[in-house]
Figure 1 (cartoon, protein in one colour):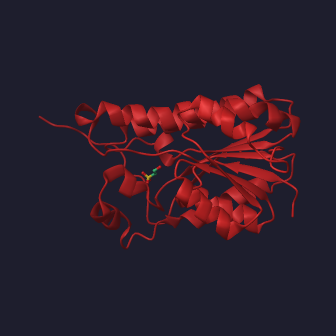
Figure 2 (cartoon, protein in one colour):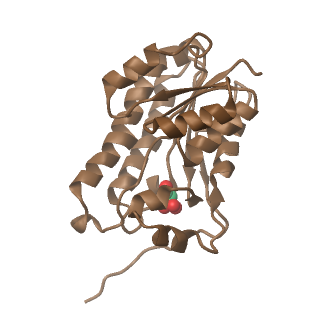
Length: 248
Ligand code: 8X3
């Protein structure tokens, strides 16, 4: 055991679930959060007493408070916050997009993330802990249909950099992780279509949730004097395609 505790949001699937497993395997205590109690309980049963699950909706501040107050002895001293919960919805161009989907991305990727961070900051400062925020390559590079999703991730990256500045002198470390294509339920959630998900990942050799989980663990295990501000990573098969020009 490392005697350290990681608080991982969105641990019900994908990168969050892989991170919960990776940190537990490395001897960390893990608090895994999510909306889907059945998935969290299944994961907690597999990981064992090193994991404590908290079920709440990131968009409900009172539910977050109640969940944090319910933390049992042994899980109250939090050393690392992994802000992983987030989602993309829709691939339509902005002028055809659904406003409710935009709002849901803002509520989860921005409002939920800042609420959790705000609530855990005092404990993290006390423990000289760390925050790792899951941003995206979409924070930096625009792509078709990325509109509000990319905007939320640009927020996450810039919020990470600003947190670093505000936390100057506290010893708290902050890192923005900015992955490209990772094969998870991400595309299924975004499009609602298994066929779209299969078409995107098929033969593309995308990164895996475990690739990102191992990156998170590596960042968390750096010596306390070292801060990685931003890490951008992509599968070898993904690259940038440049500008477009409309004619006529
Ligand atoms: C999403 C990254 O490259 O799959 O955060 O659009 S990508």
